[in-house]
Length: 445
Image (cartoon, rainbow, N blue to C red; front, side):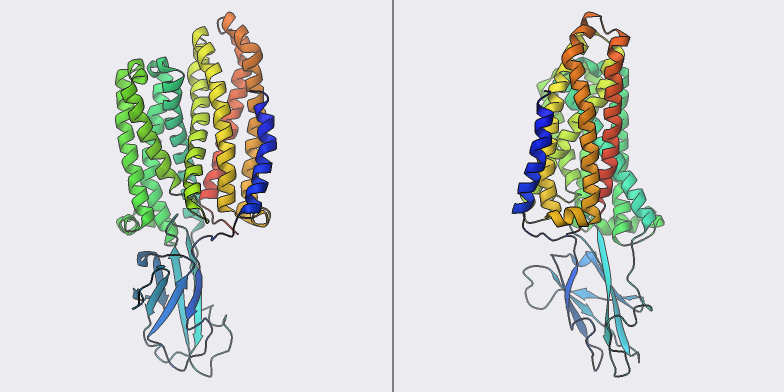
């Protein structure tokens, strides 16, 4: 196990290099590509309609266009719009004004992120001949920083709950079935399920308010949720809530059946199905569909989330469940088994992370010169620090585990490993914060 981590440190940069060199340009969030007539065009009269063409397919419910504070009616073009990226805007009479200013905003169908802008059309010879004039009267709306902060915090809580629940179930099923009767372990799983369900219920409201550039108070409005449910983002959010409801059935069976349930093939199959459903619906709310190969992105995201869950969930149960008991047989089986599981998880995280970075960022320039890319580099730096500490933990397993078992879990012998695992767990939580910020940020390319 000691030789695997240095190998990963060498192979991961090489893999990233190869992927970025082979990467094709990819689109970021939905943007306005063009309009007919074009922005700044001098018009002799107010047009009855203006055509907007976006960078990717849009849903009419995700597009808002207003003039003078009045929301305008939208429709699809009369002719077939195969790409689904074109919208017709019905424009009212300007009422003697010498300039028509349209404020548009669109919500990305994949992850709900908003973009906005303005279009200005001089209507008479008196109007200034600049595309930027008149913008002070009507400026493009901006998303609330408070809503985004609350959304990031909720996403972090959701990721943590997912990792503890899925990773905790995996740890019990694969390495420590008798832990199903441990009070601390049962409490961790129950709290993680509660937090996961709460986050899945709150996140759609925050995402809806952020996507429509509303205020924090909009999260409490029923219309925020109902409007979001008409979109692909809302359907995914509803499916995620349903998966957390099904997760309650799996958890209840474990709490009632204890070790017998954890060893049962039927329970393990049900737990695996629910875990995959939770992982996939969580990933679908991120950036895995961005880029030219969304299929690869979806697979990589699932593997990435599964690896992180097994790693962090196992670390948590190891720290708060196995180690405090200091039972020799449990230490021997669970600690050594988790060392192998963590090695496989880290390898999966590294490989899947490389694919996701290639899929989302798309080039070395975007990795270095955009805020999203620099944040991704900070996340990788934090992950590298975690691997250094993990190396110390694995060194203890290789050299001191047998002694700890012989000494029947002597506290002084086990203490260095406890400190190392605690530090590793804390740093993984920090990395999850960076992940939550990345998911709620627009990838720059």
